[in-house]
Length: 274
Length: 274
Image (tube, rainbow over all chains, first blue to last red; front, side):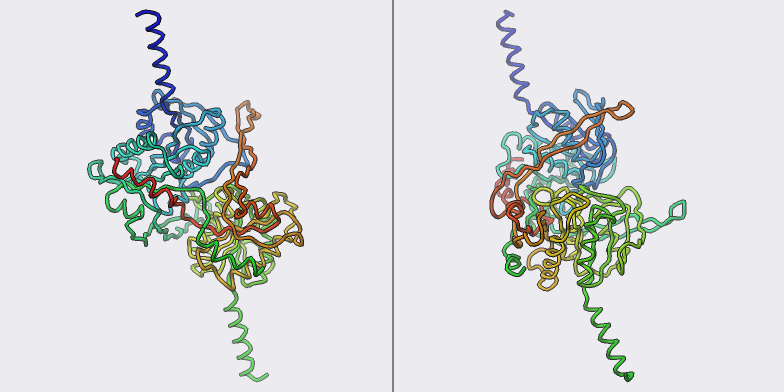
């Protein structure tokens, strides 16, 4: 090959690499959870992947951040051909460290969080570290998707999740998101072939019916341990729970705006009464 | 007094007590923060008060809950004439323990959280333990208000906050809330007389510009500590930040529904493309 041809070949390769998307992967189940391994495998087929994930399980940490103590961050060898860093903090801390320390300001084209072991549909989004990490990236202007499989087990089968995560990531990388930049994706716990497709939905109005198991610790001190059952009372076809119950992957476009707009007008009279 | 009169007198007293509202007070700064003492003083003027609050500062814990370890709950003597319990968990844990253990199913007429030392306006609601506790109570169908003063100091002056917390609680107990059951109230850090009134607003589209201070601990290990500045880019008069900047108490009716409704239609085409 002539020198000119070699130069052209190398230049084309470089351009291709530059055009590859940069994908940040995180989760709340920790770096060793099978779910994040499944998501890394999917993300690698699209471009450059960087992982920043908690060094221990951080389920149900919501949007907690660590402000009263320092954080630790260590590079780890875990996924072939992928830079991975474990962090001592919460899922949201991971995203902040990814942005400021690991990526040093390079903005990812996409952040994916999960695949969570267990549902983050309906009200679970509020408690979820997986979705809070995705939301944190969305606050930084990064298109962001949280994936969750409706199976808490360590031995969960992620084949269906991987198939649909791949399809959804592909769609978002090609088409972007017109309004907002955050998706809450939940995958029913059935085989890839049984899944009927995807539904774009609203968050169902479901809730937890809870209680505490009371006991005495080995030192005779009383403790309380949370337990509960998820109850859906919202059977509308437009909800994520309906989609999941009917064999679809649910996609809820989500946001960090908690304003209850309907109530602004109805509560306005307080301004004249105080 | 005749026996009949004594009976009538006691019966009337009992009726009055029964009609007094039951108010649950919590916070995220912990049981010893001056802000919760200020809120207890206000709440006591309305009815029966029960306090369940964290046994240590729990700022920025978002909607975190404790699921992988047991919780502790102890009755403490701290506020005169008020039952108070400290909890080892997060602010949301406090509300769950209040409901299931302390109140044993008695439903409070109102939950108030705070008064937080520092703003929970705009995007701060997402990180806030104070507002997450209030939201948890709202999820249980309890009218709920989080109060925050724009002053982080331990020596903050709560006089203006107390005046407006009293007025807002009074309004809500008398009128209820027509739509939704959660308010995010922030109070500007000016004297009670300088405050111009209240504004019912939407959450401003502000954000944090952050970074990490890097250092070495005494063992030579690197650490990262979050730091940041709050930046508002949303100068609309309908926002909480505008209200606060202009001397008003901001009231944002809030909700746990994170659905981005606008994006449901615009993202719908994915259903046919996967």
